Every structure is written in structure tokens, then in C-alpha cells.
Figure (cartoon, rainbow, N blue to C red):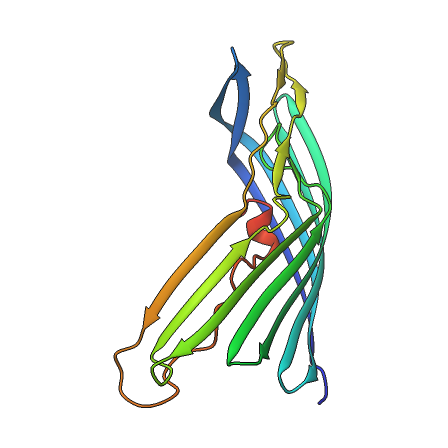
Length: 206
């Protein structure tokens, strides 16, 4: 089977943007908004689908993003690289396994919080019953609990230094039951790609 390749580019220029700002006082983290700044985003992405076997399909994409933020008293430019591999295959007993693996370099999320999640893995197992009308799914997002926020300090115009010490884990377990009341066989749709995300959402643009 011949592979198909997709190349895409994205650029945005936003003025008078509203940007979340996080700071800590007496051990409590607060969030406020700053506006009047400028944000520029440039993204490049390549994607292809690989089918090693009839029962195994993989979607591979790689991307690069440059994010620039300019406020009256703060300027930051960050560069991020991401590699996504999504795979789906069928094992014995009619079980479908849907997994994804994502690598990304550090990127700014807000003004003074930095993501620290170089690798994130997700997996879902699906099984259909009752002539494909009932689907039972068990999924785990961020298996290694790697999507955390590390502390970052920023000195603002008022001379104060804000520091964040919080770590936020994102591992989650999901169990779902889906029943389709339509008559006939093969009424269930393709298993959901649990836990996958694109570069826009990971960089806070959604």
C-alpha cells in the first residue's frame, strides 16, 4: 500500500491578546490576566499513515512550533518540537487496542509556568458485544504521569520575582459503555483515539 504524506504550515499574529499570568503568595497559587501584548505563532507539521499489516495501522506526525510573546514588561520566545505516533490494532478475542505516544520538548504555557512532559503515552482497549451494539472501553491517559508543571520564576517591572512550585499530574483512568440502538450489524463506529492531542492543544491555543 502506498503511503500518503501531508505537509502543513500555520502562522498567526495576534495583537491586544489576553495572557494568563500565575503567581504564588503564602503558598497559594493565583491566576490573573494581562492584556495589550502581541503573540506570534509559527507551526510546521508533516504527517503520514503507515500500515505494516491489515490489522495494524499507525499515524505518524512530526511538528515544530515557534511561539513569541511580547508584553510591555515581558518578552519571551519559545521553540517546541513534537513527535506523535498513534497506532490501532486488533488482538485475539476481538479486542481492539488504540494507543498513542507523544514526545515534545519544553514549551511555555502562560507567562511563568513551563510544561515538563517530554514523553506522554496513552492506551485504550475496546471490546464490542451484542452484535456490535455495545462497546466497553478501558483507557488510561498519560500512563507515566509525565505531564507536569515545573516551577519557573519571572522578574516583572515591579522588581518582584514570582515562583511556582506546584506539580500537577494528569494520569487518568476512564471506563465507558456505549450502546447503539440502531438495528443491524456493524453499527459501532471506529474505536476512539483516546488521549491523543495535537500541537495546538498542547501549547494552549485551544
